View 1 (spheres, rainbow, N blue to C red):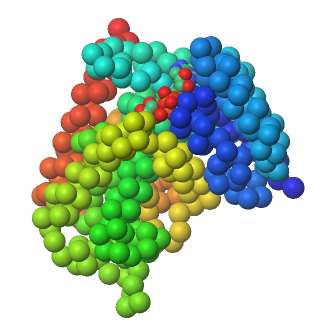
View 2 (cartoon, protein in one colour; view 1 turned 180 degrees about the vertical axis):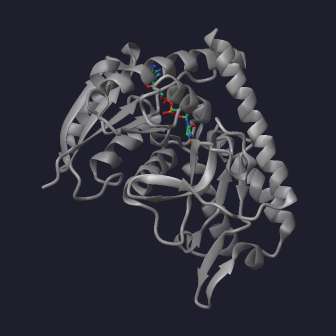
Length: 331
Ligand code: NAX
């Protein structure tokens, strides 16, 4: 039998946490033969709710779940973890300045970076979900200098999956037959969902999404804005933000990272930019990546037309501004 993998979920008493921990305990993230020990962190006001989640995990009698640590102590939470899914953060409340929200999250991610650096297992993989996800991940990277930058990422897989979903609905094809959409940039409304290289598996072989849709106005307009604004549409409909889809895509993100992406398929991950596609180095930016042996690499050599170039630059600009704002909070 395999040794259990320790998975940290911060903000585990929240909405996404409640959807995510049972998925992890069922093997959705790491596989049906991989035992797990869940580490759940939240803050003291949520301690009782967190304990309730722990009780439910016990009650669900998950065969793969070999232990649960539920704590408000960040050091205990980070001890020996192999995977860290950072869902906890400070939400933007009505009337709050952007800088105030940033400042709260900078201080959270700075201290959690130090705890991970000191106490997580060597080679721990980190996924930041909490918003502003890219910039929180960047802060975490800066304050955990001994964690390789290759091990720090943020979630844009939800946006990626939303793009797959929109194409599938539009063409009335199975979502599992659509692949190689790309989310570029920030997990925000400036993200660029790109179908230039996306394909659909048909009985006559693989066909370009662009050809099958054959409606550039939709692809360059409504499709992009629907994906960009999907989070807001969910809030409007549900009165709460996306949770089950966020949890599911966090599992997809980690699973593909650990197990590898299928041959010929890429996914979107927010990762540390090395300057690929003329994206400024030193931002956490969403790129198309393939994964193998537990490492991601940015897909190289894709053609970028003028329309796309402009959109890649816009979202990079926003991330540079966020980075500057985050750094101004450190002073
Ligand atoms: P909730 O407010 O339901 O849960 C957040 C939890 O984090 C709460 O239980 C809170 O007590 C806890 N928390 C706050 N500060 C903490 C700290 N310092 N340490 C540990 N825990 C802490 O929010 P939820 O709907 O679960 O969303 C969580 C985060 O995901 C938000 O920042 C949200 O904006 C972000 N999202 C990111 C997405 C992505 O694709 N990257 C999509 C979904 C989601 O909107």
